Length: 71
Image 1 (cartoon, one colour):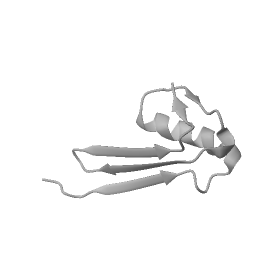
Image 2 (cartoon, helix red, strand yellow):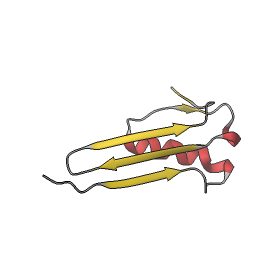
Image 3 (spheres, one colour):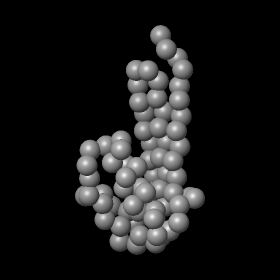
Image 4 (spheres, rainbow, N blue to C red):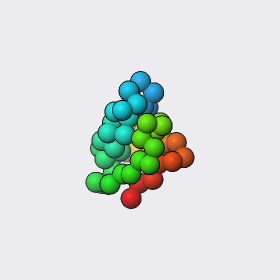
């Protein structure tokens, strides 16, 4: 059994405010199906995701500011 685990954390902390929504949209689309995003307050957006994976399992955890809504 493979017990090695990789952890990847991605945040918008170091991304300029004007590029955060584009950065986050592309990041999420890389893990999930194609989605359309709406950001009512794009200049205020902050996101963070954690991805843990082994050879047989992937776990994803994400958070974003309370104003974000994916459709």
